[in-house]
Image 1: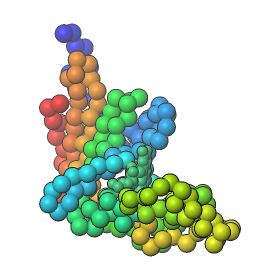
Image 2: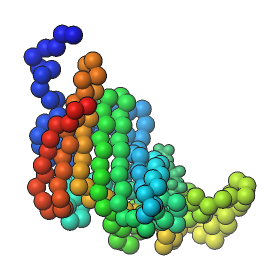
Image 3: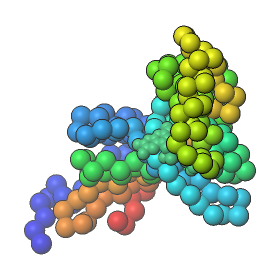
Length: 211
Ligand SMILES: Cc1cc2nc3c(=O)[nH]c(=O)nc-3n(C[C@H](O)[C@H](O)[C@H](O)COP(=O)(O)O)c2cc1C
């Protein structure tokens, strides 16, 4: 194996992890074929049974909430919603294949304000508002037509303008206590740096990790 001198250094800088997220996210937006903001969201029951699914990142940065964070929106009566209500901790994962990069984020969740949830809900196209309002997300659906009928009923009831946001359709802010950056390197000698902090206002510590 031949390594150049540059390869001996970590390519992941010691910096504010929100700034580094911003940089990597920006680069992913340039190269991903679709949905660079798609992330896996892992939740768990209080008994520790995990489940995971994709959601879309709809807000992020050090200015959000008490200590910065990452926001997604969903139906709080869904499976994930029930798990979140019972255990307000989650983990997020981005994997940008085009960048050969992964970011893992862990921390407690808080629900966004009603004003924020309204603002985001009504920023979506009318058809998406109807689709969400008509969906009992994660509940059994006897047949697709039942859902389409509910969509049609809402279209009739609200022939124009915004659809009222269902109260269970909301967003959550994950305030990170750990953000880990992983970058593919030659010969699978990958690069990992994990930033951690105890509380939302504490300074970040960081360490490299064996890959
Ligand atoms: C790329 C992608 C993005 C998605 N974004 C969201 C989202 O932002 N919010 C959401 O509730 N579901 C989203 N979904 C659907 C979820 O993955 C999931 O099927 C749904 O939320 C039900 O999950 P649950 O039964 O674990 O609650 C997305 C799916 C994919 C593939």
